[in-house]
Every structure is written in C-alpha cells, then in structure tokens.
Image (cartoon, rainbow, N blue to C red; front, side, top):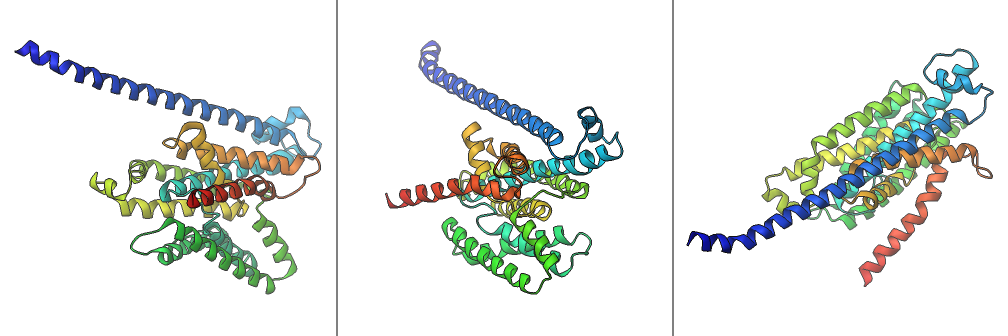
Length: 357
C-alpha cells in the first residue's frame, strides 16, 4: 500500500521539481542579464566620464588632468578640470540617475508608461517653485531646492485630488497632470513679466535644462538626494513589487498599499524635484529610462537599472551638447528632447491604436 502511494505521488513530485528548476533557471538568466546590463552601464559611464574630463576648452596638459580631477593640481588645471569639467560631469551623471529612477518609479507605481514626473507635471511644479526663487529671491540660501521640492509636492497633491474618483484612474491622472503642467507654465511666464533681464536669462537657461555651471554644492545636493532616494526605494521594494499584483491582491497579502503608494509618490517627486533644482527640468529622461531598462532586464529589475540608464543618457547628451559638430554648444535639455520626443509620440500613437482596436 505504501509503495502504491509512493508511485502515485511520484508524478506530482516530478512536476514540482521541474517547476522549481524552471523558476531557478529563469531567475539565474534574469540575474545574469542584470549583471551584464549594470556592468555595461558602468563601463559606458566610466568612458563618458573620461571623455568629459579630457575633452573641452582650456589648454591643460593630458598628464595633469587625472591629478587635477583628484584636487592635486593648482592654477589652470585645477580651475578647468576640478572646478568646471568634473562637477559638470558628475552633475549630469547624478541628475540623470535621479530622473531615471523617479520616472521608472512612477511608471511602476501607476502602471502607465506616460505617468512620469516630466509628463504629468511634477517637474513643472518643481520648475515653477524654483523659478519663483530664481526671479524673486535669488540670494535665498537653499531656496531653489526647497522651493522645487515644495512645488513638486504641491503638484502631487493637486493631481491626485483632481483625478480621484473612487480611486485614481491613470488616464485621468495623466490628463490632469498635463493640464496642471500648463498652469505652471503660465505662472512661470507671468514671473518673466515682472523680472529683470538678467533674471530672465538665468531662469530661461535653467528651464531648458543645462548642467553648464554646475558647482560642487550642486553635486553634493544630487549625491545626497540619490543616496536617500535609493535607500527609500530599497525599503519600499517589497511593497512596490506587491503593488504590481494589484491593490486587492496586495492588500490580501498584508502589504500596506496606501502607505507604500503615498511614500513612493513623494519619493519620486522629491527625486525629480531635487534633480530639477540643480540642472533644470531636463525633459524625457524620466520617460525613456524605465522602458529601456525593462527591455534590457525585464520589468522586475528595471527600477534599479533605470538609474544607470538615466545617468548614461544625460551624461552622453551633455557631451554631445558640448562637442557634437553642427550642434554644440546647446543646453543638455535640447538634445534629450530631440531623443525623447519621437519616443513620446510613438508611445502615444501606440496606446491610441490599442485603445481603438
């Protein structure tokens, strides 16, 4: 009898073992893809950083560039490399990582590829707050980053309040965000009517998005912001994975759905706002980093990789903005817009075709 039961149980055990083996192989493949993608991004970032240090104006001997990057030179080498090229490159890298992380976070949270901070108006809110300080109180200590964060948080609250109808509909959220982004643009234009020419020139260059003139203070702000946001995403990781299953199932598993959603929304808004406060609202980086990461490693691991992809995009775009023939010099945001706008139109057309099919 015992032998007979063992024979009956044998097919089930075999099927279970095969399933576990298949899942393990799939996970190993995902881990390898993630490792290769991260290593490739790190190699690209290292190459782009080297190019950023060795290319550019200023007659600095090649032998002095690396020592100057570590603060071991004085005079012209220190000024050109340590005070200009290096902070600009690091600002581009860190801001790109923040934009990429915030965009992927919103896309994962709202489950809509259009729901990124720059599309739904979060960056516009941060830009409006920062522009207020740049024009009305330019000497206020920490005024720009604080105003950018407050403006972004205000837009988050307004968007969700106006799009709430017994729950947040993602399509309505995107439309409300676009409308409020236009309101922020109108407010910014009004500020230009009461500003002097110098303030307008500073604000306009900042609003286009540029890492030109980045300082070590800005690099420190971006570095701390990235560290805090990355830690926050790590803490919320289990809850974010649960939200992908749907609110009802996540609640049934005992996950704090509302708490996770609010924290993630504020975390993504803060990441975009702090990056915006330093380099301006560099467009479309948040939109395209997440989908590129998802294609490389799949949706499960795309959130972390999006920071690397965003860093590569902004640092690469800034190098092209400085040195590309027939293009340079232009603000970095011009090139990211040229890269991201066609993808945005394709995404809108694809979703429209899907809605009508």
